[in-house]
Amino acid sequence: MLRNSLALIGALAAFPAASAPTFSLPVDCDLGETCFIQNYVDHDESDGHFDHTCGPLTYDDHKGTDFALPSTDAMDMGVNVLAAAGGVVLGTRDGMIDKEIATKDIPKLNGKDCGNGISIDHGDGWVSQYCHMKQGSVAVSQGDKIARGQVLGQIGLSGRTQFPHLHISIRDGDRVVDPFAPNHLGVCGGTYDTLWADDVPYVAGGLIRIGFDVGVPKFGMIKSGMAGRDRIPSQAKALVLFGYAFGSLPKDEMTLTITGPNGVVFDQTVALEKAQAQFFRAGGRRTPMGGWPEGTYHGEVIFTRDGAPLDQQTITLTVE
Image (tube, rainbow, N blue to C red):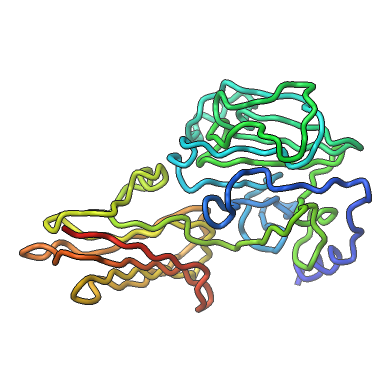
């Protein structure tokens, strides 16, 4: 009831001022293919959290939008950070190392939670800030005049972060602005004008990557991109399919199916018991006596919510 009331208030709120700039995507990747949005601005002003759709893709007091990469391998290959709008560079930081930060090590950041980053003044009080950029990649300096789409550096893993991504936050003076729902901070639901120059769809969760392996991989191996094989020997110790995903809710399900030359090898649906930012599930079979029949195997992972597929991916494997 409260959220419905807040949504109504939000729907009646004023649209952004005429002076508000529009923003282009700040990353040189394909949303839904080579990158995804992991977190949005937190609209809950209490100790809880919800994004602009009343969904869970945020965390308490999160003030920006996180554009994430599927692996640290993708980060190492290099994905450019782009200026979302033209302006003048207010300040930069570089030199912080790229690594996942443990909770116990957060105080060692000495307030530099943003990691390597850049802030840009767009005029009339509007400022954007870019965080967690790759060490040594920052390509602009204080005072530089920046054009929309200009390369600023690359996505990294610096500062207070657990996965490679770009965090972009937007402010109008001292006010945090959600580009998906400007002038609606503190409420959720409804239909709003946005500050994005082009349509940026909201994705409530999905598959990041799926893969085959010869055992259940460790989560760190999956996150790095090192887990997964496209060929295995017929005498491998096991045949396992994994699905790496984001944005789960309680009662979601993940179905993993492996089909080989002789039919279905493995088919299992796993219930997801809680909301998780990132997670994986895996399943398969031990290798039978005599080994796996040689040939092509197909893997399919379906991420389901409320009885309907939220996302689905397929992959092939050669057994030889």
